[in-house]
Length: 503
Image 1 (tube, rainbow, N blue to C red):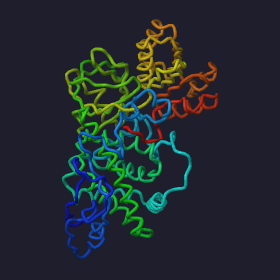
Image 2 (cartoon, rainbow, N blue to C red):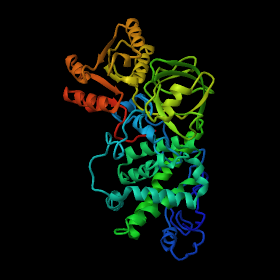
Image 3 (tube, one colour):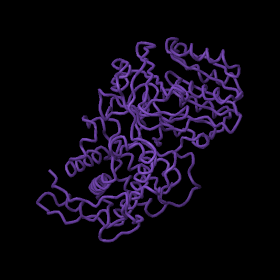
Image 4 (tube, rainbow, N blue to C red):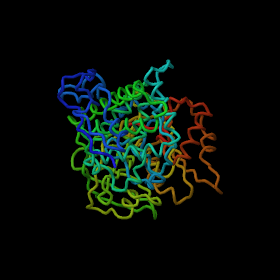
């Protein structure tokens, strides 16, 4: 069992320190050296960390200079530069539902509902800077990653053991079933550190994480505890290559990472709540496993068509799943979601089979950049599969509300006729708007028909393309679009293999 740990200096929200000092009051410097007892020398050594840069939350009158907080990637202009950076869920919890411990304190955005979680999470690369030699810190960090990669499960288990033994007060911020939490928190930190040189993309990613963490009750003082345990786990399992230089590189990287998240959360706190309560006002079961829910938030909820939010139900506290908005912003303030219940999907099954009008759920902040760029008159090519039709419908409504006459082509893919649960709504939109074309595409005899249908019509090289649905459909759809000449920077889709911020 690990010994009790010292109290670490925590970042503050009013310090004038710019985060670059490394004196005796540094972030990883203990206030007193912990006692060493037989069998705990390793743990005591982990506590005697180098003095390091100290993350400081910015004063409430300034967003700071290290990582100026923005509105994230929610603006339409950002969508044109961010193909594949969104991370919504449309189809229930999917394979990730077997991991119902959605993100907790400092955890990354939840995998898309109905989407198979990627074997390795990566920061998106669509807006990477020109190739440059890796910095010395990045070289050391990647060397650590190579060393701990084969024992990732052990690193994860040890990290959480350190965190909960040293800081038991943080346990309540995580889901009760920690076997479902697994490596989300640690992997997000490792991913960010590995891409420490890619500042433009990394800052966006971390700012979204910082804003999203507010709904878990994460505070600036929690970050040092996590950093301490991160270094402890890495030093144990990368012992073969670990040295003071490597430790210092990780301390600097984590300090930068945590500071960006702290700044983003502090700025967001000035303009938005950490979460919204929302009452279910309508629950319509479209099929045996698909429901359309309409909710009324307790205060105005700003978002853009094509974005998504995270949802927590009263039946599974601290477990959040992402769902796309199924309509453009409405004058009455109501929000609509399409949810597909899937096996082992805790949240999706609760929303489809348990939720009723009058129930109260919680919503996180909006996220995602799969939005319409209204500064151009390019046509929209929209591919929606299953409940992935929800954000596509919202995009169509958005174009209509802006009074634009641009061509919008919707391919609505499904495995069976029954899966076209919203086809009547889409056809009514088509009747009202002559610029809209809706083509239902149903797979036949197990063969995917959507890629062939896309090739049959077109050309599409002058269109902005949107792809939403299960991961297999997204992959095949993106491949087809690229094959037929649609520029990659004009393809937006829900992230299957990449993290964002999200979010």
